[in-house]
Image (cartoon, rainbow, N blue to C red; front, side, top):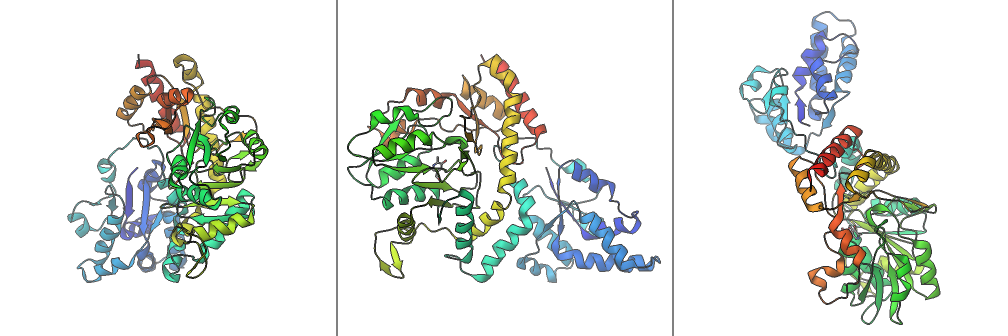
Length: 511
Ligand SMILES: *Cc1c(COP(=O)(O)O)cnc(C)c1O
């Protein structure tokens, strides 16, 4: 997919001769081939004035209305490329419009072409090019990324741009009005009383530990198979993680193995809902209740998922999620949140995230700085508005994979992910298991299909945890067999067919 920035003068001349309600053929063609079409937002008024004058000159009645409707029709498949303050530097150029287009195009990825019919701009050569040549110049790039955030950004651009600009102008970069609004919306979404916006999921886990006073001498029961962050939070407060093996079908902590790991020092259970599917909270909560333990839910990957109708984040005593860009709901930087119905805990986490202050420069706890920035909250509010739709799209994509992979599963001993009864998944990852995973991954990469290994080692096998007991045969085998395929809300069936075709060919060639 190439970026094509369309010079206003090219649209004006096309609109002069176009029949009503039609578009130039090259424009429709570029659009249907999936290229990203842009018009520079700083030029539409001059294009409109120009076209109105030219239509008047050729004797069209009501030239202005005609110009508006013809231009609007051409703008239809295009996105607006923002005019920014730095573009004003082009004013003194011999060709200010050409110079502004160059500046704006420079902010897009390097492969941008500027389509024009202006002869002096065309003489300057690349990135300017005529409407007949762009097809030759577009570099075909058929590689499939693991996660594509650009399509989502295209969809949300107007909202995200105004939201970000609002923050730039009100200037409350920390504790801005977006934070409180986001906290309210997220709490409602999850169905809990309180949400506290944070700087990351890792900080959320750490603050949950701190808020419950978990520290040296305490044990926290957790899964052997997760992102390192889960164990970091336990170790950073000086407590000891006690690792439990996983269930091979759901990749989550095997809840039936928890009780044998309890000791008088156990304070909390920290289950992770891996790849987007919730751990078995019914069993976990009942063990916690019987033994007076706290349940800290690591919902970093499962935001949006449900268990027995309850949303992830609301399944434990306190829930923690992450808005790392590649998570199901992602910011444009690090961000996270805690969820709880417990008002005391809410107050505590709120204070701890802000240096333990209960009022300005009055510190009642030793806290940290774990605040979310207003800019991230502004981005998240925009993304939250389409999150449910995206969740549905991820679910459809997951079901398409399940269907497309049935045959491969049988022929090549590939294990497909399974949902436990009562669960829906946010499909943070679509992860299959296979033998010779490393060979398959390398061969897919050669064919331009991205994939990832989440995670190559159980946590207790990481060098940083040397000396911690690792009694997790299932996690050890799973870590050698898992492969996550491309997954995001804008993954279309054509791309999925391609991915699966490539995977099946590779599996057929793997000994
Ligand atoms: C991403 C992730 C985290 C950490 O979240 P950050 O926002 O990146 O700090 C914690 N646990 C799991 C399971 C994760 O996937």
